[in-house]
Length: 300
Ligand SMILES: Cc1cc2nc3c(=O)[nH]c(=O)nc-3n(C[C@H](O)[C@H](O)[C@H](O)COP(=O)(O)OP(=O)(O)OC[C@H]3O[C@@H](n4cnc5c(N)ncnc54)[C@H](O)[C@@H]3O)c2cc1C
Image 1: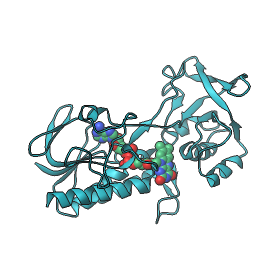
Image 2: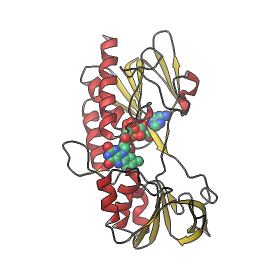
Image 3: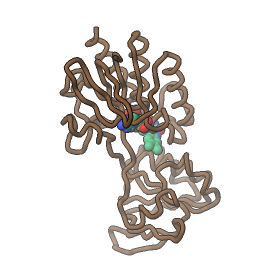
Image 4: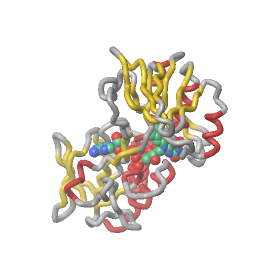
């Protein structure tokens, strides 16, 4: 029996693991993908205190290494179900079952899709949700980025250094991103802003070749030729595996109290997966620390 099992090894889960392990608890952390969460697919992080400017994968690796050095067990599987028992929880993966007194959910979010015609045909054949993973495939080619938040801006900057041209397509006139990063993007000579516009269709043969764009104000349509398109149009919470527990809101985010505990005793959640306003690395690590410290208090 583990004292604490953590689901998800992004910044929130890794921070929870650091606090739990340093309190001499028996800790396991599940990760179905690559440890580090969304920072693994972030080109550059410029707002995590103490690092100035750091490559996302480097920051992710530092956090992960710190956790491994504390003797936390990494369980390289997706969790498919959590069951409440009399003494704690059973955490299920596809092939195994684990028991714990406390569970902390830190499964974050995944990228939303545009859900327009052609998207599924060209997924990973031109359409991507990760510039740092796939950007190099488009060296000296024309690509598009769709979105108006910080992620879209950061990845546009990253891609502008690789691609010959980047169309930045946003459905509104104003960007949601922080003003300083928007200014940076506007100064890039090989970035064309396509504002008040939505993607209507992805077109191609073996791989993506064109996109049909519609201006939402004028109704005018335009075809742009691109080799790649990177979508950053929002997130969806990774909470399918806890649907039955009734701990989420209507959008699927987990509801917690001030101690980061759900309505089920000893089941905590932290990071991007919970109901909150600001989803950043620093807020995820904050949540992970508080959730773990409250869980430790309960255990003792
Ligand atoms: C492109 C991009 C750029 C960004 N840039 C910045 C930035 O510059 N600064 C900043 O502060 N924030 C940035 N963010 C946001 C930041 O990355 C997130 O707020 C942060 O990573 C959230 O951490 P988390 O641990 O809550 O979740 P995540 O990082 O999403 O980690 C969750 C982890 O849980 C795993 N997981 C999910 N489901 C399961 C399951 N069932 N079983 C096991 N494991 C599971 C996932 O594989 C993932 O590794 C960016 C995000 C993106 C996408």
